Image 1 (cartoon, rainbow, N blue to C red):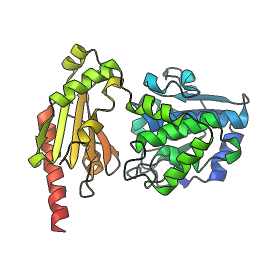
Image 2: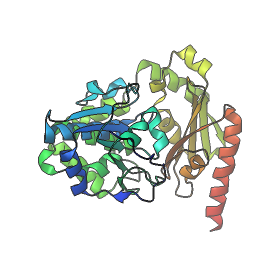
Image 3: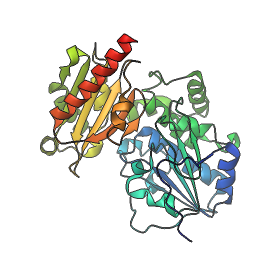
Image 4: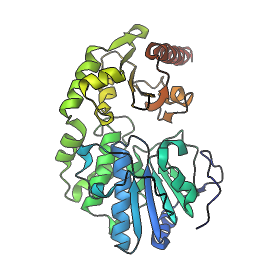
Length: 341
């Protein structure tokens, strides 16, 4: 198979993905790979596995199909197909069709980005309004609660079953904070209800994949909360954890999940920031906003990150307090601009 011209992160030539194109592409491809962003979360895992199970329902074993993701948290192992996810990018097999889910730009695919360039056709399904597009066809709906919501509207009803419903519901509840965030719409609720009608154990999904924390996560949470600080007169709450502390707590990268939302719910806080050092010496930054006057994606875009108006992420320097100086300055500027207008 010949190599394609590299598809840049911003692709103004990307065509609109329709339900017909999506399903015809699945039916026609002899081999398919499914990709998601680095440090995969519930929506990423749910959408990629929903696509995998959907392909199997349509094609059976009549197609080579593989999901490529970085290691996922064990709390998502109940999803069908999770045991078949590959973390290996060393062989660089060629696929006729590549489907990227929940990925705001090409770089967010990490080491799996080469599969996009090597595929004969590349499809993007996403809900990050900062996404400028990559691949040949894309469906990007910034108003949608999750990529799983976008994906659901591309699926043919006859091939949606309980295992797909579990994946879709998981993605939706994780990106809506169990249907609490402002990105939840009537359509979101309708899809969640349709999944529930499939007989999924929705209570267990919420309890075990969203609220439950491992013992290591509990220790990290204790540290994060006990070392939390406030800025901007209490309107900004933040905390961070360096690699030395992570080693003392015996905390893996997946144990960092869930901390930002514990900070976000602080009374009086309009925004929250959480930073942690990763093994590759980078500092991961997660930002959340509780106010329409604060768009955290604007801050993250300055550092080659992105996301949504009220939830975004990026990588910044090792100087945690310097990072917070910059974040606070930008947040205060946004708040002041909103007050003036």
